[in-house]
Image (cartoon, rainbow, N blue to C red; front, side, top):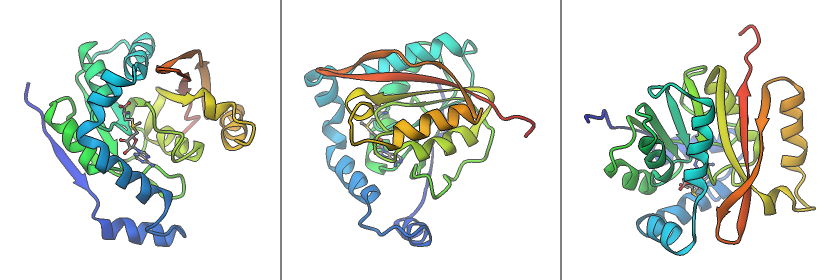
Length: 225
Ligand SMILES: C[S@@+](CC[C@H](N)C(=O)[O-])C[C@H]1O[C@@H](n2cnc3c(N)ncnc32)[C@H](O)[C@@H]1O
Protein backbone atom coordinates (compact mmCIF):
# COMPACT_ATOMS: atom_id res chain seq x y z
CA UNK A 1 0.00 0.00 0.00
CA UNK A 2 1.31 3.43 -0.87
CA UNK A 3 1.36 5.99 1.86
CA UNK A 4 1.88 9.68 1.67
CA UNK A 5 4.33 10.11 4.57
CA UNK A 6 4.55 13.69 5.59
CA UNK A 7 6.41 15.01 8.57
CA UNK A 8 4.97 18.45 9.27
CA UNK A 9 7.57 19.26 11.84
CA UNK A 10 7.76 22.39 13.88
CA UNK A 11 11.33 23.43 14.52
CA UNK A 12 12.53 23.77 18.07
CA UNK A 13 12.64 27.53 17.55
CA UNK A 14 8.94 27.50 16.64
CA UNK A 15 8.18 25.58 19.81
CA UNK A 16 10.22 27.95 21.93
CA UNK A 17 8.37 30.91 20.44
CA UNK A 18 5.01 29.25 21.08
CA UNK A 19 6.01 28.32 24.60
CA UNK A 20 7.22 31.81 25.40
CA UNK A 21 3.97 33.35 24.15
CA UNK A 22 2.07 30.95 26.41
CA UNK A 23 4.33 31.65 29.38
CA UNK A 24 6.08 28.26 29.22
CA UNK A 25 9.84 27.81 29.31
CA UNK A 26 11.91 25.51 27.09
CA UNK A 27 12.61 23.54 30.30
CA UNK A 28 8.90 22.91 30.70
CA UNK A 29 7.54 19.44 31.36
CA UNK A 30 6.90 19.14 27.60
CA UNK A 31 10.60 19.46 26.80
CA UNK A 32 11.40 16.92 29.50
CA UNK A 33 8.81 14.54 28.03
CA UNK A 34 10.26 14.93 24.55
CA UNK A 35 13.77 14.19 25.81
CA UNK A 36 12.57 11.21 27.81
CA UNK A 37 10.89 9.56 24.82
CA UNK A 38 13.65 10.44 22.38
CA UNK A 39 16.07 8.42 24.53
CA UNK A 40 13.58 5.55 24.88
CA UNK A 41 12.34 5.40 21.26
CA UNK A 42 14.45 2.53 19.88
CA UNK A 43 13.79 0.28 22.90
CA UNK A 44 10.16 1.28 23.50
CA UNK A 45 8.28 -1.45 21.59
CA UNK A 46 10.34 -4.33 22.93
CA UNK A 47 10.27 -3.14 26.53
CA UNK A 48 6.56 -2.32 26.57
CA UNK A 49 5.25 -5.39 24.79
CA UNK A 50 7.80 -8.08 25.81
CA UNK A 51 8.56 -7.00 29.38
CA UNK A 52 5.68 -4.87 30.60
CA UNK A 53 2.59 -6.61 29.22
CA UNK A 54 1.37 -3.43 27.51
CA UNK A 55 -2.13 -4.27 26.24
CA UNK A 56 -3.74 -0.83 26.18
CA UNK A 57 -3.21 -0.26 22.41
CA UNK A 58 -5.06 -3.47 21.50
CA UNK A 59 -7.93 -2.78 23.92
CA UNK A 60 -8.21 0.83 22.69
CA UNK A 61 -8.37 -0.31 19.04
CA UNK A 62 -11.05 -2.87 19.90
CA UNK A 63 -12.96 -0.20 21.79
CA UNK A 64 -12.84 2.13 18.81
CA UNK A 65 -14.14 -0.67 16.57
CA UNK A 66 -17.35 -0.80 18.61
CA UNK A 67 -18.19 2.79 17.66
CA UNK A 68 -16.50 3.40 14.30
CA UNK A 69 -17.78 0.96 11.70
CA UNK A 70 -16.41 2.58 8.53
CA UNK A 71 -12.91 1.29 7.78
CA UNK A 72 -11.78 4.39 5.91
CA UNK A 73 -12.88 6.68 8.74
CA UNK A 74 -10.30 9.43 9.23
CA UNK A 75 -8.58 8.71 12.55
CA UNK A 76 -5.89 10.63 14.43
CA UNK A 77 -3.62 8.71 16.80
CA UNK A 78 -2.74 11.52 19.23
CA UNK A 79 0.50 10.77 21.07
CA UNK A 80 1.06 7.95 18.60
CA UNK A 81 4.62 7.25 19.71
CA UNK A 82 6.08 4.31 17.78
CA UNK A 83 2.72 3.39 16.27
CA UNK A 84 1.58 0.49 18.47
CA UNK A 85 -2.03 1.73 18.42
CA UNK A 86 -1.88 2.36 14.67
CA UNK A 87 -0.68 -1.21 14.09
CA UNK A 88 -3.63 -2.58 16.10
CA UNK A 89 -6.07 -0.37 14.18
CA UNK A 90 -4.55 -1.46 10.87
CA UNK A 91 -4.98 -5.11 11.88
CA UNK A 92 -8.67 -4.35 12.41
CA UNK A 93 -8.89 -2.96 8.86
CA UNK A 94 -8.62 0.81 9.43
CA UNK A 95 -6.68 2.42 6.61
CA UNK A 96 -6.91 6.20 7.03
CA UNK A 97 -4.72 6.93 10.03
CA UNK A 98 -2.68 9.99 10.94
CA UNK A 99 -0.22 10.32 13.82
CA UNK A 100 0.74 13.22 16.07
CA UNK A 101 3.43 13.22 18.74
CA UNK A 102 5.71 15.59 20.59
CA UNK A 103 8.72 13.36 19.93
CA UNK A 104 10.16 13.07 16.39
CA UNK A 105 12.30 10.08 17.35
CA UNK A 106 9.20 8.10 18.35
CA UNK A 107 7.49 9.02 15.07
CA UNK A 108 10.55 7.95 13.09
CA UNK A 109 10.02 4.40 14.41
CA UNK A 110 6.31 4.64 13.59
CA UNK A 111 7.01 5.87 10.07
CA UNK A 112 8.95 2.68 9.24
CA UNK A 113 5.83 0.62 10.01
CA UNK A 114 3.94 2.28 7.12
CA UNK A 115 0.76 2.60 9.16
CA UNK A 116 0.08 6.34 8.99
CA UNK A 117 -0.69 8.61 6.04
CA UNK A 118 0.32 11.89 7.71
CA UNK A 119 2.57 12.44 10.70
CA UNK A 120 2.74 15.62 12.75
CA UNK A 121 5.25 16.64 15.38
CA UNK A 122 3.25 18.81 17.76
CA UNK A 123 2.46 19.38 21.42
CA UNK A 124 -0.85 18.67 23.07
CA UNK A 125 -0.90 21.20 25.81
CA UNK A 126 -4.09 23.13 26.30
CA UNK A 127 -2.89 26.72 26.06
CA UNK A 128 -1.39 26.38 22.58
CA UNK A 129 -3.48 25.00 19.69
CA UNK A 130 -2.07 22.15 17.65
CA UNK A 131 -1.51 22.76 13.95
CA UNK A 132 -4.52 20.74 12.69
CA UNK A 133 -7.75 22.36 11.44
CA UNK A 134 -11.08 21.95 13.26
CA UNK A 135 -13.72 19.28 12.60
CA UNK A 136 -11.74 16.95 10.34
CA UNK A 137 -11.41 13.62 12.15
CA UNK A 138 -14.09 10.95 12.48
CA UNK A 139 -12.25 9.63 15.51
CA UNK A 140 -9.26 10.35 17.73
CA UNK A 141 -7.47 7.74 19.80
CA UNK A 142 -5.08 8.76 22.56
CA UNK A 143 -3.42 5.97 24.53
CA UNK A 144 -0.96 6.44 27.38
CA UNK A 145 -0.70 10.18 26.82
CA UNK A 146 -3.30 12.35 28.52
CA UNK A 147 -1.69 12.08 31.96
CA UNK A 148 1.24 14.17 30.71
CA UNK A 149 -0.46 17.26 29.23
CA UNK A 150 -3.50 16.89 31.51
CA UNK A 151 -7.19 17.13 30.67
CA UNK A 152 -6.90 20.61 29.10
CA UNK A 153 -5.48 18.82 26.04
CA UNK A 154 -8.90 17.26 25.46
CA UNK A 155 -10.21 20.60 24.23
CA UNK A 156 -7.94 20.36 21.20
CA UNK A 157 -8.91 16.73 20.55
CA UNK A 158 -12.56 17.80 20.65
CA UNK A 159 -11.88 20.76 18.34
CA UNK A 160 -10.33 18.63 15.58
CA UNK A 161 -13.03 15.94 15.79
CA UNK A 162 -16.19 16.16 13.66
CA UNK A 163 -19.67 16.48 15.15
CA UNK A 164 -20.71 12.99 16.32
CA UNK A 165 -17.09 11.82 16.08
CA UNK A 166 -15.54 9.49 18.64
CA UNK A 167 -12.65 10.04 21.05
CA UNK A 168 -11.13 7.01 22.81
CA UNK A 169 -8.52 7.74 25.46
CA UNK A 170 -6.92 6.01 28.43
CA UNK A 171 -6.57 7.47 31.90
CA UNK A 172 -4.52 5.40 34.32
CA UNK A 173 -6.44 4.41 37.43
CA UNK A 174 -3.57 5.36 39.75
CA UNK A 175 -3.74 8.92 38.38
CA UNK A 176 -7.55 9.13 38.29
CA UNK A 177 -7.81 7.92 41.88
CA UNK A 178 -4.84 9.80 43.33
CA UNK A 179 -6.36 11.84 46.20
CA UNK A 180 -4.04 14.76 45.33
CA UNK A 181 -5.11 14.79 41.68
CA UNK A 182 -7.88 17.34 41.10
CA UNK A 183 -7.48 18.30 37.46
CA UNK A 184 -9.08 15.23 35.88
CA UNK A 185 -11.70 14.96 38.64
CA UNK A 186 -12.87 18.52 37.92
CA UNK A 187 -12.34 18.83 34.17
CA UNK A 188 -13.86 15.62 32.83
CA UNK A 189 -17.29 16.09 34.51
CA UNK A 190 -17.17 19.74 33.39
CA UNK A 191 -16.71 19.02 29.69
CA UNK A 192 -19.39 16.33 29.95
CA UNK A 193 -21.86 18.67 31.68
CA UNK A 194 -21.14 21.46 29.16
CA UNK A 195 -22.37 19.04 26.46
CA UNK A 196 -19.12 19.21 24.50
CA UNK A 197 -19.17 15.41 24.62
CA UNK A 198 -21.36 12.52 25.70
CA UNK A 199 -19.64 9.91 27.83
CA UNK A 200 -20.40 6.59 26.11
CA UNK A 201 -18.34 4.32 28.35
CA UNK A 202 -15.36 4.28 30.70
CA UNK A 203 -14.75 0.68 31.73
CA UNK A 204 -11.78 -0.18 33.90
CA UNK A 205 -9.47 -2.34 31.76
CA UNK A 206 -5.94 -3.68 31.83
CA UNK A 207 -3.29 -1.15 30.77
CA UNK A 208 -0.05 -3.03 31.36
CA UNK A 209 1.22 -5.46 33.99
CA UNK A 210 0.01 -4.39 37.45
CA UNK A 211 -1.62 -1.22 36.07
CA UNK A 212 -5.21 -0.64 34.98
CA UNK A 213 -6.78 2.30 33.19
CA UNK A 214 -10.19 3.73 32.50
CA UNK A 215 -10.87 3.36 28.78
CA UNK A 216 -12.93 6.48 28.03
CA UNK A 217 -15.13 6.77 24.97
CA UNK A 218 -16.64 10.16 24.18
CA UNK A 219 -18.98 11.15 21.39
CA UNK A 220 -18.23 14.74 20.33
CA UNK A 221 -21.05 17.27 20.07
CA UNK A 222 -20.54 20.47 18.12
CA UNK A 223 -23.95 22.11 18.54
CA UNK A 224 -24.68 24.48 15.67
CA UNK A 225 -21.02 25.06 14.71
C1 LIG B 1 3.41 6.05 26.79
S1 LIG B 1 3.72 6.68 25.18
C2 LIG B 1 2.28 6.06 24.31
C3 LIG B 1 2.53 5.95 22.83
C4 LIG B 1 1.43 5.20 22.08
N1 LIG B 1 0.17 5.90 22.16
C5 LIG B 1 1.32 3.80 22.65
O1 LIG B 1 0.28 3.49 23.24
O2 LIG B 1 2.30 3.05 22.54
C6 LIG B 1 3.33 8.40 25.32
C7 LIG B 1 3.53 9.14 24.01
O3 LIG B 1 2.91 10.41 24.14
C8 LIG B 1 3.78 11.40 23.64
N2 LIG B 1 3.44 12.63 24.35
C9 LIG B 1 3.55 12.87 25.67
N3 LIG B 1 3.13 14.09 25.96
C10 LIG B 1 2.72 14.64 24.79
C11 LIG B 1 2.18 15.89 24.45
N4 LIG B 1 1.98 16.84 25.38
N5 LIG B 1 1.88 16.14 23.16
C12 LIG B 1 2.09 15.20 22.21
N6 LIG B 1 2.61 13.98 22.47
C13 LIG B 1 2.92 13.71 23.75
C14 LIG B 1 5.17 10.88 23.93
O4 LIG B 1 6.15 11.44 23.10
C15 LIG B 1 4.98 9.39 23.69
O5 LIG B 1 5.24 9.02 22.36
